[in-house]
Length: 337
Image 1 (cartoon, rainbow, N blue to C red):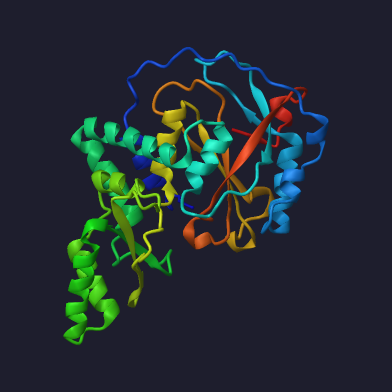
Image 2 (cartoon, rainbow, N blue to C red):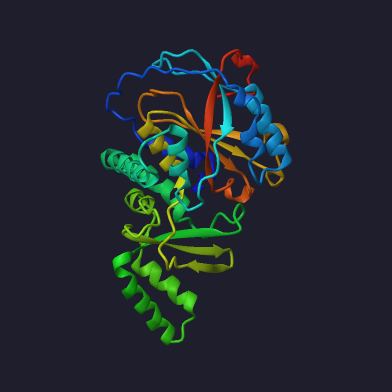
C-alpha cells in the first residue's frame, strides 16, 4: 500500500528539499536487451489484471501496443528506448507492497523488509546532513501527509488521518492509562484518542517519518502504528492496531529514496477509472521519481489502480516488467516520458 502526495506543490517541496547525493556513481553496467519473444506477442499480463474498468484496460492495452518512449540522460550511453510494459503479477496487500513491488520490478536481491530499511537509512543520512531550510521543508511535507491540520482540507477529503507511533514496550502502560479514563466514565474512543495523542509519537517531521517508515508490521518493529480517523464533525474511529501487523505504506518520499538507492528513475503508472472524471485518453498517468545523483540504469515501473479520486488514487503498488521494442520510433510511442 502506498500514499502519494495529493498536491503538486507538496510533492515539489519533497523533491526540492532532498539534496543531491555527493557519492560518485559506479560506471554504468553493460545493458543488453532482447526483442519481444513470441510469448509476449499478446498482453496476457493486462488482460488478467483484476478490478480494472474498461477504459483503464483499453488505455493500458494501447500503451502496451505502442510502447513508452524514454530518453536516457547524457551520462548514460544508451539510445532512446521504447518500453513495452507488462503487469508482473499481484503482490500481498500487507502494507509492504511498495518495497515488494519495487524489489520485483528491479530484480533486486534484498527482501522487502531489508529494502524498506535501506530506504529509511538513505533518507536519514540525507535528512541529517541537510541544511535547516531543507529539513523544514521536509518536515512540512511529512505533516501534510501524516499530521494534517484538521481545520482545513475538508473541501478535498471526507476523512483525514493522523498517524501516531506507540512504542511496543509501552503498550501495557498506555492500555492501563486508557482504562483509567474509561473507569472515570469517559467514552472508550475518546479516552484512547486522548492517551494516544499524549503518549505516542506524532509523525510530523523527518525523524519521526524515519521511525514510521521503518514499521513493516513484524514482531521485530520497535513501534506500532496508531491511526486516528476524523471527519469534519470530529473523531470517527481509532485503529489501535492491537496485533501490531500494520505496516507503514510507501509514499513519495520513500519512492524518491528508493530511486536513489537503485540509481534509477521510478515511474508510478497510475490508472484511474470513471470516478476520476477524466476521459479515456487521459486516465493513465506516469508519475516520475528521480534519484538524487546520477542515473545509472533505465527506469523501473510500478502500477497503481486508481479506485477513488479523493485519496489521490489507489493505495496498492504492483510491479511492471519491461521489454525493449526494437523497431518503434519515439514519435510512434503511446507515451513520451
